[in-house]
Length: 81
Image (cartoon, rainbow, N blue to C red):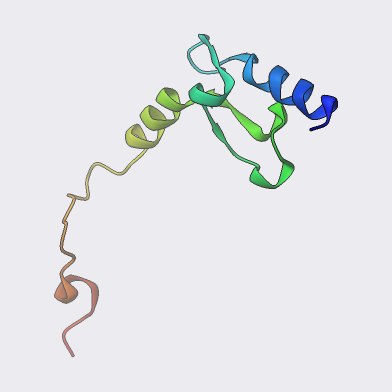
């Protein structure tokens, strides 16, 4: 084990970030989604919006005029020729 790897991991686990939407400070790993998985375990690979605010934004931005249908009907998608 390299001592440098332990320091990077330790700093990541103790990192706290403030959400841009709600303004609350939360733990980086458990409170934010990871957006850039190819960069490794660095703080810049996590989003700046917490998980709760992201879920709220996505559900609020859905179209409300289209009812949810768990089984899509083929007749509604394709015209009857």
